[in-house]
Image (tube, rainbow, N blue to C red; front, top):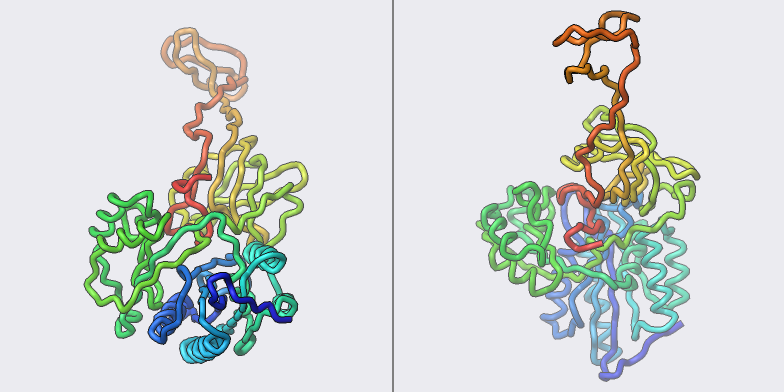
Amino acid sequence: MNNFEIDNSGLYPLYVGMDDTDSVSGMCTTYICSVILDRLKDCGFKVDGPPRLIRLNPFAPHKTRGNGAVSFKLVLKSKKEIEKAKKLILRMVQELAVMEDPKTNPGLVFYEGNMQGETKSELHDYALKTIRTIIKKEETEKLAERLGIEFFGFKKGRGIIGAMAAIGCPLDDATYELLAYRDPANYGKKRKVDPESVRVMNRQTYPDTFDNLDDGYMAITPHTPCPVLYGIRGETTGAVLEAQKMVKVSEPIERSQVFLTNQHTDQHLQVAENISQMEKLQCYIVKGMVNDFPVVIEGGHVIFTLNDGSGSVECAAYEPTKDFRNVVRQLAPGDRLLVYGGIGRKGTLNMEKIELITLAPVYEYVNPLCECGRRMKSAGAAKGYKCPRCGNKIRSDSKEKVEIERKLRTGFYEVPPSARRHLSKPLVRGI
């Protein structure tokens, strides 16, 4: 099947997607994309719009770090020029991808023509399915063949799954990320970004940029040996470019690139009709009632059970979520919640944020109050109570039920930037 069409401007569109070219020990798919784009521009090829960074299912079993695929669109003058561009891209992916890593299995896809109609709709659906569920490589190949999408898989070739999602992902809500890349000589070394300049940048650009700081400390620098020096996330291209001017560094920046992305849009979340229908390795918004008082387990993780009548699920605020755990500790049986998060292999719901809808009353049982206003003390087993102030005695052993004033309030609570998943939408962006 050939979907090739010339567009209204007389140019030939070519969509390019790639994924799984990086490694847990270094490299970055966005960096490879940036290098390829600069080479294409140097060769006279025209890039249409910003490249796209599409984050996929955070629970995908074979993901590499952030599980991000990239795509971009070229508009070319002839079929011959398209073939030249494809050969150049294919060669550069083979040269730059970390092929020696056994967990790296790159994929590259090309779609020629205008993306519209049923093809566009099918690719949208496929991308959302890839972001929210687990897709098999065979399913991707069948769809690509039916839609006339050319694909190349290297080694096990699993990267074609994300590569195709990257060209088809709908971006009804989107953000931007500016990524600054290091000189290769500095890979693996401590990043030299001035913290105070980041705080100044945050004061002047927040909330047009966000997740710059975490409890006052820099959140824009990664902690891996990858090529990224820092990443600034924001609502517009202009916002992240303006923010970059304020960030001071003491090492050379090799290049930088702004990506249009689905990061921080909650695109990975599905609304669960009930708890019993939720599946492992998927992400949900689910409503339920707290079933028991939260407990702190080894490692500092806070756990409680959410129930909705159809079933129950264990919910966790893990140690890296920091002060978010303090909120979760204050939950009580009967509290009604909306929980946003994903279910791991063990079936635990990893919370990204919660909305506390209603608070249940919590009671404690205390010694009775004396007529003089002082709280009485036990007079001994089965001997009732005695007032330590006036000496008054009562024979009853029953305690008084008193409602405890709760400090927790209804509303939204979220994990800090350092614990936030790439796709999770921060409250500053709205709900």
